[in-house]
Length: 627
Image (cartoon, rainbow, N blue to C red; front, top):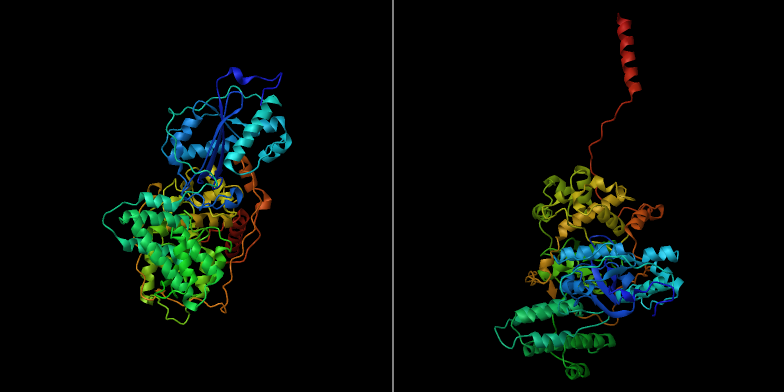
């Protein structure tokens, strides 16, 4: 790409450029980076090198439909703290470039601050969006690329977008005469050693890492590994996060590779016995067993021998749900959570938050790093997806005796589950129960002007509610843009946000209640060792016969159609969109968790002055009559 005649020549300058693009979990200040792409350019705008990596956000990823990055993809990815120093060394001494630069600058600033890393970002950046508006008459990256006939093979991939932006910058400068001089450069410490990265599409081998990481000898605790493997196989699938937990448990238990291989083979044999229990192995059972064996690095020939001939022995105990079990839900699911709540409640289950008494967490993605998912792993609670949950619902024994707490025990348990909301009286707790929507309604009615962080002892002004993957996230983003200390505002303050009325205010306050109930995710505990799983009562995990082919198959969740991929809006566009009429939702029918009506103190009615004049006139008339 040679400079064009008559246009500025940058070869006399020694300052290079760094084109940056990010993919994130959303657009608010509470959201995190999930992918970074960097293209380093020489002073003449030719490409020097590229760099990319996925980032573990330690949060749920509710917008995977936009950038196609799921919680599973980032299980092995480094955190921003892991790459901060090296990323800074890449940007050092260069003019920073981005399309919609305020977005990239804001997110990188937030991440450097969270990581307590040196922040040498400069202001202003060279913004190709501003240049495209000036020279091409369009702002969106896709429109600018179309106008300049630049092909982007993978939109919403950080590196591909950064490469397309670099080409756009070259075109704007050499073909349109855009000025790229006079911009400040980033200032970071001296270059550091290469950091660990995980490019999009790359996968690391769990079994290979496990074999090299396990100690050769030491005190062995096979039971801990067996328990972890049992939880992982609840849904007959081992997710990438569960692989990592098995690895950590094996290391902590002092197991070597031979110990782990022996346990994995034993479990695989038990699964084969279970599959042969009806005398036939179906194609689905065969595929399931092969997938599990592959994840556990069990010898393929050994697995084939188990599949070729019927196996006798003891089948593994199968996880089942019982009437009265407590479960929790997390993530934006294919079937709305409200529908799952209806089905689970009809099946005799209790829906609530993740506590040590919780039997199961149902997640949109079992690899999720949402607050609920992290707490479930800490407590040793199994995590399954929607399909497995549908199967578990169909196997609940409705003829079994329901284990319900005595009536006299319910108030104490209720008060314990809402203990963090000390402003609720015992009588009010009986009204709200553990419903987040009713607790939110009570807070709005009783304390509309108090800062939201005073709702619970574990909340601080800087804490942020977790995104849900639904439309309300748009207003969560507006809230974070206008109030960086989000929980410093009151419920009534939320009504001042563009597009937020009483209904949306209730939803936003309910998200704060959920944050208090679920607990705050602390970055320092990301790699904490899981606590032992709470023991379930006898009968809660039983061996049940596998359903025969004649039995009806439970309804499977229908996949939700992905929406179109929007372009990340600027803060100004976000505020405008939030107040636009097209985002006003239609009235909805009350759901199962509609807040119970609460008696609010009626405001005193201010009498008009005319009524006062009439009252005094009537009084004087009566007085004159008697006189």
